[in-house]
Every structure is written in structure tokens, then in C-alpha cells.
Length: 439
Picture (cartoon, helix red, strand yellow):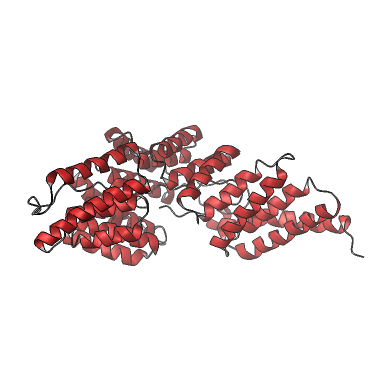
């Protein structure tokens, strides 16, 4: 996942990832070498569960009941095999774990992945589950490297996930060249196994997006200059954006229903300034996969940028249904609701805006964006209030801007908004004494 922060008012959360949504890039196993003879397991039962799994994938029809039915079915087949042979049926245990993951039953999924033993695919899924619950970049990279080595570089999913995490680490390094080269080499290895492997093609596009940002034309400007209010963002490398587009086109030519590639296509369109194309791509991604968090977030943020407040609201709510403690989604929803404030709905909508801001602050109390948006919300309410209520709203705005400036400090990413906050504070220092003179 690309690192991001929700900017203060109307930002785009650019998320393009092959590793944060592992359940939709994995397929159940039909059999493993040495498991063609399965004592205690009916081939017809195994095939029936595979068909049901595949049908749920095709129709995006997973429900808690379906996950339990398919997951428990495969688990029982593995248990029968173990009663006859003394060891679980690895393919069935792995498939059970995948089924439980489809509905977020992570603890149950982990149990079955562990029962699959040394199976590289199951070990890979364990890394994904555990990294998602408690991210530890170095530990996860080392575990994936061991899986890749143990499988003699023949486990494409592990190679792609390793490349994704290597790119994530590279973004934090002052000189990321070597780390990016490691990622590129692992993507090439995955594509050498299967030149149409969709997660590898999608991650290759993300790799080129990273390069496009790394080679952005900054025209000699330093970081401080780029952070000044009104500064134009650097133009990304068109050559690398074209390479990212080519990788996405290959993925979609192979499977037009592959949602992550549509999401990455949307990010590329956005970077090229084609906002209509970006919106269509994000909409297509979330239509193809309603559980695709990044697509909902990207569609919402893009609509927010262009004042499509109602569409943004619905997309942020879809994201929160998938991830209830998502800071950016709570904050974005509050901004989308604030954009819909009117005299007729102010009372009810104000309560919901306050609730969403409070939920965002609870998730990340040290981040400053909530305070800025609380200040803007107070100013929006102030315009419709009279007397003491009007003055109280202005005082709330001043206090929130002060908190924002203190929390944001001298971080370059907040420089523009700190400058705006200080302008508001200067106006408030002039206005409040006039409206509410000291006795």
C-alpha cells in the first residue's frame, strides 16, 4: 500500500496495492504433489467444495454462512484424511483458511493455514494475516524471503508480496535504488513463472508509479520550496507513468474483471490529470469487488476533490463498513457531510459530523487533521448562528486552529495548511474582540 495522509480539506488518497487485499488474488488448491491419493476423502466432495468456492468468487457472493459452509467443509475433509493417515490434507486445510479469510475470520483462517504445514502458499497467507494484524516490515520481509528460498523461487504470490513490502520499505529510504531493484527482480521472477500472473502485473505497475514519483521533475526546487503555500506539485515522470499504464493494460487484457488493476489504472489516470478516467476506473474497481477498500477510498477522495459530496459520502460509508476504524474514512466522511450542510439539515447533520470527527480522533489522537476540520466545521456553523452561539463557534474555531498548529509543528506535508490556519487565527484575533469585547 502506498503511504498516504488525508490532506486537510479535499484530498485524494492514492492507494494502489497488490498486498493489502490478498484474499482476492488467491485461488483454492485442487491437489498437491503426493496428495493425489486422499484416504478418507471423497473426490466428489472435494470437487463440490471447489466448485462452490469458485462460484462464490465469480458472483462475489461470499456471506458469513457461505464462508462457514465452505471452510468447515474443507476442514472436515482434512480431518478425515488425518484420522486415516495421521496428517492433515494440506490442500484442504489451505482451502479452508482461504474460505474463512473471505469473511474476515482471521483467527480461524490462521489455524487452518498452520495445519497445512510447510506448504509455501499457506505459509505466505500466514505472513499476510499476521502482518495485517501487527505490521512489522522487517520481520515480514524476512519470513517471505525464507518462503521464497524454501520454494526455490517457485511461489509467485510470495515473490509478489515480497516485492510489495520491499517497495514499501524503499519509500522510507533516502536512497531507495537498491531496495527497488530487489523488488523489480522478484517481480521478474514471478512473471517468469507465469507471464500473465495478475498480481505481479499490477505490482509492476505500482513499481513504475513509485519510479514516476521518484523521478518527478522538481525543477531544482528543494523540499521546503515545494511545501510553500501555492507551490505547484512536481510533474511525475511521463516515461514511467507510460510503463505503469502498459503493465495495467497487460493485466486487464488478461482479465478485464481484475479489480486491483482497475484501481491502479485510476491512480495512473489521476497522475496524468485525467480525472474522468480516474473516476471511471475507481468506480469499476469497486463495482467488480465491493470488498475493495482502496477503491472505495480512492473514489470517495476523488469525488470529494471535485465537490461530489454525496458520492463521496456513500463511498466512505462503504469503506467504513469494511474497516470501521479507518482514520481517513472517518475524516473524509466528516468533510463530505460538511459539504452538504444546509439550513434545513444542519441540526441532524452537525451531530453526525461531530461523531465522525470524534471517531477519527479516537483512532489517531496525535494526528492534526481532525483539529483543522473541527475548526472549519465551527466556522461553517458560525455563519448561521447569532449572538452568543455565534461567538462560541468562533472561539471553538480558534481553539481548534491552535491545536492543529501545535500538532502539525514544522512537518513539510502540513506547511500549506499551517499557513492557512495562521491566516484564520489572525482574522479571529481581530474579529473576536470586536464581537465580544473584554469587560
